Length: 295
Image (cartoon, rainbow, N blue to C red):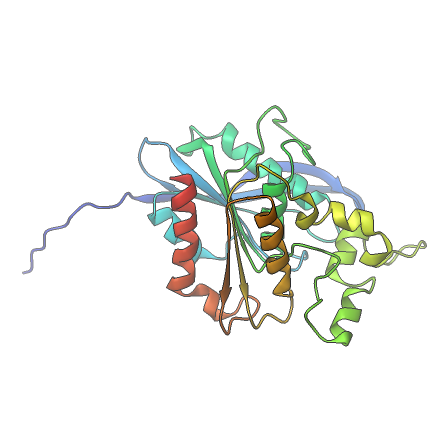
């Protein structure tokens, strides 16, 4: 027989899985579809309010698998955060549908803060790739801008942001790469063009991003930077071949110009969503940021 003494150092964490946070009746391209948007939450089992982190998954604007990134989410939950992971509308839906959904998810957490032990004054957002773009957009756009749906009297503001290899400027997503790759980003079939202008299957041809520069700027975090934004951590891989690392560099410089609390961390030898991102050194950088600015 063996007997051990156990030191109680951490709370039990419960999961609330596939909670419907919003219904959207149709999208821009298909008016008869009803979208139930869902999130899953990791919640410390106690009666104290905790700061919350809302995670948005990447997926090239074509999918939003909100059950991934469990290593990040679990580490944040162990650090004392309520961690929500939310899906959002993807292609064939178009801008600003994902932003509308992300802000609805923030409002939902505030409305249900008592049920999920959330401190409604301390909510951060995290995302990778397209989810990093969404986290940035929520962080830099004004409260109520793009807001639609339920509980519109509730604030959509967030208090901290982390973007992992997220898009910051839809006009220059492939600017670090070869001419062939840059040309692909200038086509009507690029993910950013479809996000802005829809699928090119109608009688009226859709356009590449560069044909409507003003709309692309409205849809890009870089062009919303201003005074008074929450702290924003940007991380990118120096071997990324899908989203130009200079996206994060440009965003970082813009934030610094407005004296926003920000940091840019380049991950050596990391590509777009490669295994380097799931190592403890990276995960703890994210945890540290939210501990610093939410706890």
